[in-house]
Length: 253
Ligand SMILES: NC(=O)c1ccc[n+]([C@@H]2O[C@H](COP(=O)([O-])OP(=O)(O)OC[C@H]3O[C@@H](n4cnc5c(N)ncnc54)[C@H](OP(=O)(O)O)[C@@H]3O)[C@@H](O)[C@H]2O)c1
Image (cartoon, rainbow, N blue to C red):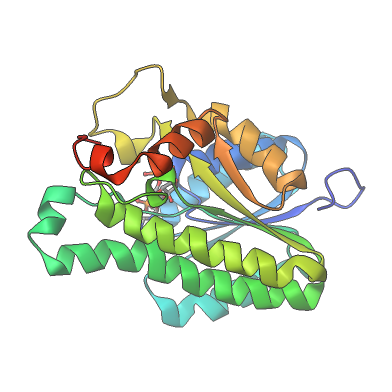
């Protein structure tokens, strides 16, 4: 990553209209980065790019993509790669929060959210990994979730997809370790964004996108591993994961 150098950092963000992604991109823009915004709503992407321009981005680019359209991934990444002759930071941020009850009643709903949250992300990670490996430098950040750490009754459809992403990213990190490419798995706790607007919230465990964006940027700069944000989620999940099964099954988590 070249933030401290003279050449502006080249950032690719997929799911750029996400509240968390935008909070991260604003920080990159303030440092004068170049940002390629990829997402499915072109108007919103242009508005986001204008926001980043005002905040100091050296350049912005917009590419429309529905992440479930796997056939277009290669062309979109090609376009992003060629504009600035490479990418320093890629962040995969898109995702959906399935309704757990509806998913339980519908195989179609279950698999539709799995396609977005797991299959499309794994496809993008595969493509990005190969390009970063050839480049011999850079960092891939992917937003997974602590929900993937242990399947729980209240959200295991979402959690199973995030578990797949976390595990895939772990293997990718291992594979790329000697290539100069880092992989950061971002595991945010409860964040107040459009995705969680339907949930009861605002308790002490909730964070703003801005709060966790600071952690994410720091993690992208230096980490090669999992990043729980805020930090205390690591300890919450440690407790949840190690809770003995006979107790766990009696909880309403
Ligand atoms: N909020 C939390 O508490 C929390 C906690 C842990 C992890 N996360 C993860 O953080 C990431 C960002 O979520 P957020 O909280 O920032 O929510 P958000 O603001 O609702 O963002 C979700 C993003 O995903 C995009 N998206 C959904 N389906 C897509 C598709 N098929 N193709 C392209 N883009 C698609 C949405 O695009 P549109 O704008 O076009 O709808 C939106 O930009 C997600 O991966 C989420 O699972 C969130």
